[in-house]
Image (cartoon, rainbow, N blue to C red):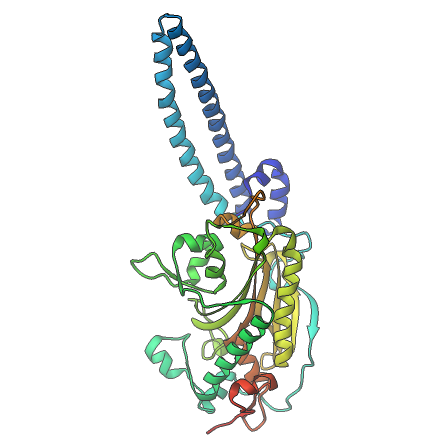
Amino acid sequence: MIDIHQIREDYEGVKKNLEKRKDPELIKLVDQARLLDENWRELKKRTDELRHERNVVSQVINKLKKDNKDAASAMEKAKKIPKELKEIDEKQKALEAKLRIIMLRIPNLLADNVPYGKDSSENVEIKKYGEIKKQGFELKPHGELAESLGIADFDRSTKLSGAGFYFLKGDLAMLNMALIKFSIDFMVKKGYTYVEPPLMLSRKAYEGVTDLDDFENVMYKIESEDAYMIATSEHPLVSQHMDETIDPKGLPLKYAGYSICFRREIGSRGIDTKGLFRTHQFNKIEQVIICKPEDSTKLFEELDKNAQELYEQLGLPFRIVNICTGDMGTVAHYKHDLEVWFPRVNKYQEVGSCSNCTDYQARRLNIRLGGTDKRFVHTLNNTAIATSRCMVAILENYQNKDGSVTIPEVLVPYMNGKEVIKKN
């Protein structure tokens, strides 16, 4: 949530920033917020006047009584003030509730260095890593390959749970665990605290980390309960500090959270339907940092570098792109995507995102610095590894002509020494 003071003090600047998102509804929201805030401030002004008037009348009554004079008229006037204060208080609370709803729907302001563009096709490439190798043979779709090797079953999972789920078996299940353990070990060595968070969050907690109205269409809601299955461990890792004051001396807080994640969205056809690239359930290791505002730019670079190092060690070609205005989500102020090369579709595809959310989540969750510094903290997140997409990249980039798959060297110790996945 952005600061209402930004709308008060730089109304045109806020509108100009939001115009980059090419959504006229956002400008309407700012206008509504401004009007509600002006009405609220008028009521506050009247409240201050009444309180001052109450103090003055009290002094008059005391003096009249002290002078043995008739105070009835002044006392009658004093009786009316609490009633008006109560009425104004109720109106203020109603306005505050309406204003909060509007403010929750206004996205974060974009950084000056966010490139302008209408959609993901206009994201700007800023770095490439690794050589794209020509296999010299026709690659099998990763789902078909996994089933032929006996390491996945998509038909039985569909029979039991519907599309978008899977059975991982044998070496592929081991590869999934190898990626998880490899990523956790990497992050712990970098000084991050390993966390396994709750897999469900209340609506209040979820509204603090994202625009729930926008996000609900991809989330699983537990029927008849105030609980949502988490879509990423970023959400509980950040919201755990809701309504807390954090000692600046203890910052930054650095978390590496592992969880199973749940999303309703899946691919609509072809490789995305039968396979691992986009599924209802997946495993992910997420990096989250909570820090002082002045440190977030530097720590964004740290998160970005961590993910790059992980994929460098896995030997997978990738590129980093600066996300443009038309592809930017609600929460991020600035964002990079890491895209790995997928040879079967002959293009780079997103496997993780690095976001500086500034104080947008912290303001929604009321997470402040302690001591004399009452500012809101900054929050950042970045995918370390989402194992399903990473496994697809490995099954394609490390696929051999005979249908076997070579294990990336760094994962061999986590695979109990196994170097190649072959059909049993």
